[in-house]
Amino acid sequence: MTESEILSYPIPTDAALEPPAEWAELRSKCPVAHVRFASGDPATLVTRYDDVKAVLSDPRFGRGTGKEDAARVADTDDGGLFNSEMATVLPQEGEGHLTWRRLVGKWFTAKRMAALRPGIAAMADQLVDSMINRGGPVDLKAAFGFPLPVWVICDMLGVPDSDRDKFSYWSDCMLSMTRYTQDEMVAAMTEFGTYMAHHVELKRANRGDDLLSELIDATDADGQPLSTAVLVATGQGLLVAGHETTANMITKMVAMLLSDRSRWEQVLADPKLVRSTVEEALRYDANAGFGMVRYIDMPIELSGVAVAGGTTVVCSMAAANRDESAFADAETLDLSRSPNPHLAFGAGAHSCLGQALARTELQVALETLLRRLPTLELAVDAAELVRVDGLAVGVLSELPVRW
Image (cartoon, rainbow, N blue to C red; front, side, top):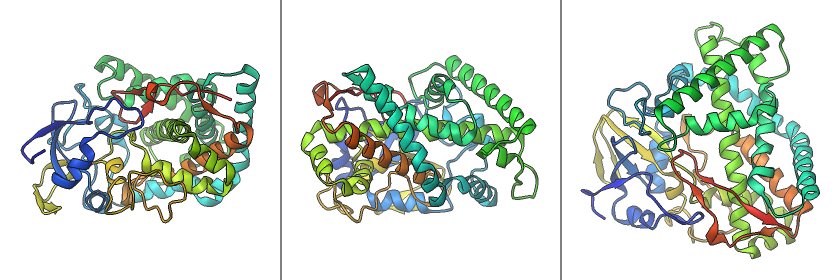
């Protein structure tokens, strides 16, 4: 692999739980690589831990939303999620972004997560009850991994989780790179926007103990009330991010543990490993999705390679999390690994706002499954698991299990 080669990105692979073979070669021989997105636009891919962390942590570089020469992710006319109205409405940098993060971040503190934990555990138990009553085998993704985080984020937003199937479809359309057409994406975004605008108006008329009700009474960096457009985009963004990634990660984490059942037995024998197992699953996830995009508007150097201003850089946190220079035995799933400074949630000013919630949900999900279904196992061979292509997040189509 040379610097002159242009790779299609994301790099295709058939294995549901294994990384593309190209990752290791890129890190060692071509850490700053030329790639082309589904849109056809050129970009630069970085795969080394230090480079990914440096780019994500640099406050000078944002997502490039609204920049005419920023690469578009999707193969549709509008370029997908990062170029959508939702992305352009929310403040992406500067004091406006910091103010927005502080307002929303109040709902994702460690104290709030501790208060939410009993309710999440109770919901997890209800879902397992339903699985047991139905009998195996079942698709763990549909029966447990998806409804748990949807219920949590809907509760935080004051949105009925009975609409979860709509949210799932709208989210997939927004996260599409090649899976949906332009017309399907526009229709989904319009429906989603209308739904959330109606919900915001209901909250204006009747405040509740939820995040959107609190934001309605908040002010931005200029001391002005948040606009309806910002409230709607915030609700959309949290619904998408608050369930899509965690639902898929619950499914993938369990798949990793059950694909070599000695891993499941290890945590079963020592439940104190739950927290480190969650962190290691986040690090080890080879199907983490697109990565994070940054628009480099001034020349920089990465791994000794000059990157020109006006370049869109995609940071593969998943590839960086397999970097041997940062993690000993990086290709080994070490359930007791500590410390574990993985980059699954990004780094810097745009790191995942809901990472404390995601960690709580993942820990509770694993604790509940170990306690309630200790004999859990895959109902198919691990080689038969299938990943869903064409989305900006890493997804397994299903996870058949029995007990």
